[in-house]
Image: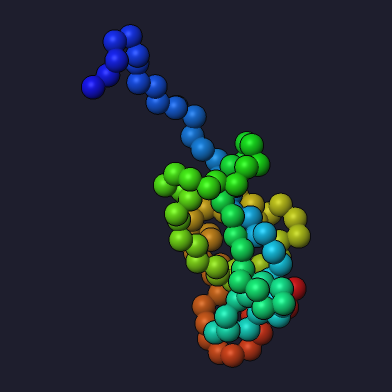
Length: 104
């Protein structure tokens, strides 16, 4: 039941979110091996609001599951920042053996 004079307001501003690693990944990463943080600690990833820089602790976004994948390419510059979903999927390295996938 609504109170008189109170209107429901819905935000029309879309949220812009990104994932941020809170610790470094132990290198090298080998195909089929567990990906861990430095010194064997669990990898810590946070969902961050791009506008405020705040970590999202509540709401539906806070319960999202994350799959870490290895991508083909060198990301020292900005060329990999704006991939389409199809480009992203096409650059996922699929497990093919037990060799090093990424060494830094």
